[in-house]
Image (cartoon, rainbow, N blue to C red; front, side, top):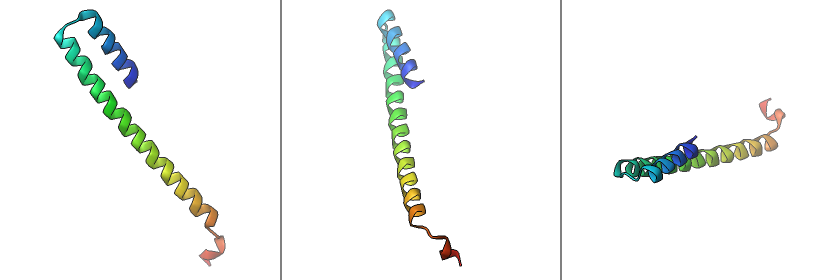
Length: 66
């Protein structure tokens, strides 16, 4: 979604060649970059938690409950 919106804004900027379109594109590109970095950070965090969970499950023994 972010990439398609950014690409659409970029094309609008190129076609209209106005300062407003350029500013719109710049702002959307910045927001897109921030959103994609945050998504990447969250994905990495989830991957780390899944790896930790898997490690805990591998080492867990049901008899520890008794």
